[in-house]
Image (cartoon, rainbow, N blue to C red; front, side):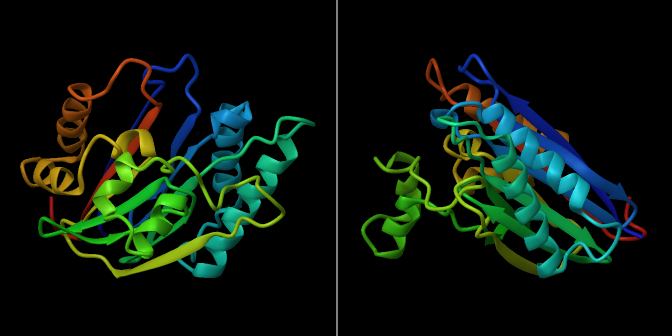
Length: 245
């Protein structure tokens, strides 16, 4: 059996309330799942939205078959309904979500919004979720580059989010067979905004474990954030195949 070395982090940053929620919801030998959600504060009660989404994912995730697309879409739909159930008149709170699910050497991402999932292999990103945002659409139209999303005027405008309507409109990305040393990063926009993908890879290469990887990236963020910056959250995971310590 393989194992997953994982560490999670969340901070209110420069805000009075932390509207991010993070949780490792499964970690049993070769079965692992984690989720991050970012409540949309401009709609009010973002902390309630994100925590409801994470709790719903944990509750709806079955004990097996967790990388299946149908299963993961159902988890996002459950999260969507949980956010909707918490809404009050005049407070249409919403949330993003990104899930990593791994079992028996296979892995998948599922996401809604602009919280991201990354897969690194041999020092390179080989998979990254695509933001459901106006700025991502600008990239697809060739108007800006992917790197320019971080500074785009419409970066915070989402095209999909939990709690927006009666469907999550989730997206599942199959990562296929994972390998020894593969590393995963789940993070909210308050995190990836301040660390480039190249820097994520560099920091991973000089790290002995997930804790060190997270520490290197947080050090970069600490030197760049401005007063009043967004909440930021991440889960760092490194996979070790059977027989590898």
